[in-house]
Length: 432
Image (cartoon, rainbow, N blue to C red; front, side):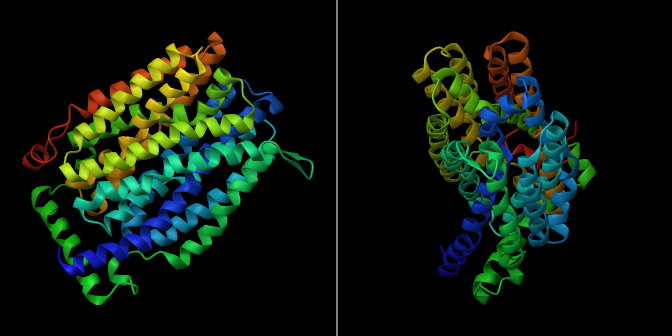
């Protein structure tokens, strides 16, 4: 590798990745902390499993509305300003969650929180494509998205501790929302001054480093334009874009079923205190973190994306299935939650490397927004199905079985994709 290339990669990695990694920890914690609050909130407010499942999932209906415009704004306008706006608005709404009393308030605030956060994750995916070329992308995405399990690893014991406080007349679950919402507001302001939109604006890069990364990204862009000269509306109908959207919907349905219900399920099978539930819940996320980092490294090393996406989804389906079958045995159930977590986390780096293999510019931004927004509607369906089935049957078995079948369906869809190293380039105009 050229010395300038190595220097540029290191400098970009050190400057950008740790910061956006930290931002995503804050974002994901605010998104899923309702799962820990539910250990006390549902009893305190009289919410049944169906009310909680609907409120947890309605976040993604709001998320759906602004996702695609948000991605295009990042591409066409300013990632720095848009990400700052997102963080400040979602931080305010997250703290307001600590003052709700009724199911309607719960639904409205979760919906608005989703709308406020819309565009953050796919916007970051687009933003990273402005700084890292394709050969480095799965590793970079794995490091960035390792914030998902790490946020849960940090959030699990911390949330368990906060649930036990009673400050100024407010119970612990209310403080959970307030305390974990404030950092988003603070770092939203910091983002305005810290992030740089594109390499050409980076005063912290040396001139030869800036020239190298700009040339590399321009070469990649020109190569894609030569082989894939279609517009945004055509891209939305492209066979692989449609299949990626469907696969993500099915996988996300299983993933958020795990994220939102894991504390409740662990408490059900273990009978432990809230703090111990938080500690036990870190185990599946630690397993998921290690698997995600390995999967991203393996995918970049081999250049293979499809099987690195499908096999983890199959593993997640098996983990869900056996966690339901061993629900009466706490240790086995937690072990199977670990398997499910490994699958749910480790498919992500290779999956999100697929769209940027054949799309560029605003077309890539729009399609990433489409895949993420429609796919994340699965984040509404999964938690709601688990809550609805639990309320109607008095058991979580049927809901967990749905999560298993959903992730298995996602793997099946991924395996119908053409080889992204060949067929997508040979048939750029193929639509459904």
